[in-house]
Image (cartoon, rainbow, N blue to C red):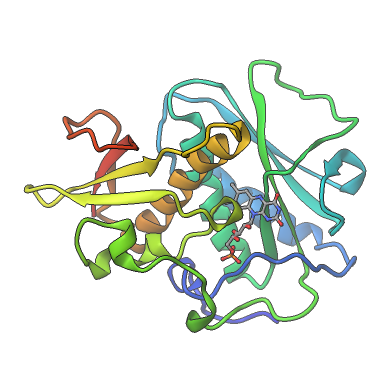
Amino acid sequence: MIVDNMDLKEAIYRRQSIRKYNNVPLDSQTLDGLRAFIDNTRVLNPNIKWSYDIVGPENVRMLQRFKSPHYLLMFSQNRENYLQNIGFIFQQVDLYLQSNGIGSCWIGAGSPKGYENPNPEEDFVIMMIFGNPKGELYREITQFERKIICEISDRRDDRLMPARYAPSAANTQSWYFTHNEDGSYNVYRNKRRIRLNKKMEKWNQVDIGIALAHMYVANQDTFNFSLDKPHHELKNKVFEGSFTI
Ligand SMILES: Cc1cc2nc3c(=O)[nH]c(=O)nc-3n(C[C@H](O)[C@H](O)[C@H](O)COP(=O)(O)O)c2cc1C
């Protein structure tokens, strides 16, 4: 179902992870449109080189069994906040796909297979499956399973709603926002109680970028991010940066 005139901002409140696809590939014009969109996304950190590739099921290994003709592999230099940067860039892509009637789902539990990374300077980070959805693409706002705003912020603030609806690995929603006197926000990541799951710690950093992408898309003209603003340390949380909207 193609919905006319849904923009990225509206998709924040309608999108859902899609795990059922039909096997009709997207046409080349649609894929070219996607590539053009990716080339024009905003980044969180301009100092980090990143790239992507679009491959078929023969080039991926996934823990789960669902399939689509299309997978986006994301690569990046491993430095500074590269995980957050990848989350930030490709959540714009998730919203673009969903607002254009295409299903998508971030896939942490997967990797390239039989694929030679063309750029050894960059590591494989994570991937996203996408394609024509089988079944409903959108959900109603009441169907989101998310923490209440007081659990993710030091104060009730409707301006943080776009971040609240963001997707995250296993729906962990490990973001926490605080308000500064100058009107800016700090964003923190909840530390995992048990550090057994190294992968989840990595994905939660991607999640922070995803939540920031929603704040950017909802405030495109004013959003500004800074990694190294003076800040308070919070117990059991990692400072991830500050932003204005
Ligand atoms: C970094 C990241 C990794 C994810 N990995 C997987 C995965 O391996 N398999 C899967 O089925 N869903 C995966 N998801 C999708 C989440 O489970 C989903 O976003 C979350 O449960 C919220 O649901 P929603 O996206 O439908 O709102 C991942 C999401 C993120 C952000």
